[in-house]
Image (cartoon, rainbow, N blue to C red):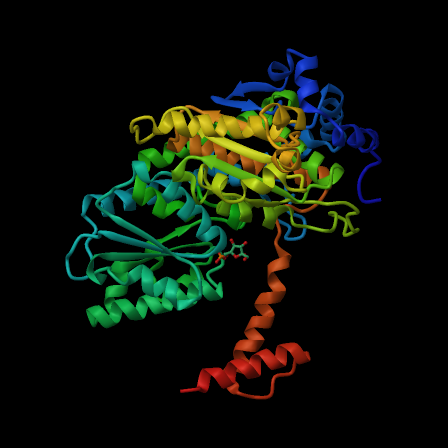
Length: 539
Ligand code: F6P
């Protein structure tokens, strides 16, 4: 039996029918306290989940499901360093990366917290040297450009955090991020950079990733060709990795390496040394503020009762829609331009974590698991895909994220922005009936087209302002909601075997493209390889 027999599951299966025909207008008018009941403020985030397809009984059953799934116990296992990533036999301790100096967290008998703070100090010292101009390039010039080379968790977190916190960043420095093996990514990122003023951060947990190593080698050649001296590498390359041996093999002095540990998953690593580019951009103090925000959310998740626990409720709502109501996606809609890369970051966090089809014991899951996360910043999405949200046929729960104070106050912009985010959740929930449309004098044949069915669920998260601390809270909030879902589904949210097969096959095909030997695959794959070879040779 893959999961413990659950009475909450049976109750929720029964309640799903009620939710499918739930009318949010009636729910709100029938209960004047509904908005109050299903919203609260914690860690300075106002969380409104009243526009969801839930009532007291459904919420009670979801909370019971959390208890039946031993969410509290599993949370403690994670926070205390037990090896809950069972397929890789690893602890899952991103929470240790933001633990205060005096905390004690043990992995294999060793307190990992001093090591975390040692690396943070090393990063701070380096960041201060670069930011002050003390760190000089090979020809004696100060560093003005920072290029992070990494992919997946070694790119998405850094690039998201840089964009999110750009307001707090050094505007006289340039930050670029190279991830794709497509040479265009590297070529365009370095096109206008002076090698004498450029430092590369090669970020790779394993230091074996094809994309990152290929880009790093191209960067090395680019630098050496410009400076005509191999020894320039030591002033223009640093590494972030768990693999000192491979870093040394690449030619980076391990004195210029910033370490982390196998208990930090790639998609949970933006606040480890993988965040070095973030620290260079915003400075050590702001970086520590971000860590404090992460920690605040960690403590909230660890201690608050489920009914008052933002990440746990988000996770439970995710389970509700995926498992019980058959929703396949979740839209993340930040009304903050600086969060434009937040949905892309969340895609790896959520989908690499919970895109799983077997339980911890290997038995097959018999319901939907992790949703497809996607989104764009508001208001742009409103003029694009929101049509489908309002009048399409799909059930798509939405997360609206907004901030009360703009970082760039300008005329009426912010009031207009916030009016829009509030209006969207209202329109989705309550729609517009045929009678209302008719009362506006709309012709009968157009009434079905102009009716909005409503009952489309959303959460709204309102924060005061986008700051390093609040970004830390938001990321940790999603991390723990992903964890909550993984616990309830009894899947391993911390491995990613699904990315392996493609990597292995690509290696084999690379060999075939280079050798020119007859490809030995299925007919379709063989034909694609042959066609590529022919067109590549054409003058
Ligand atoms: O694509 C799989 C993956 O292992 C991700 O989980 C990880 O974030 C990414 O590759 C990069 O890995 P590394 O940091 O080891 O280069």
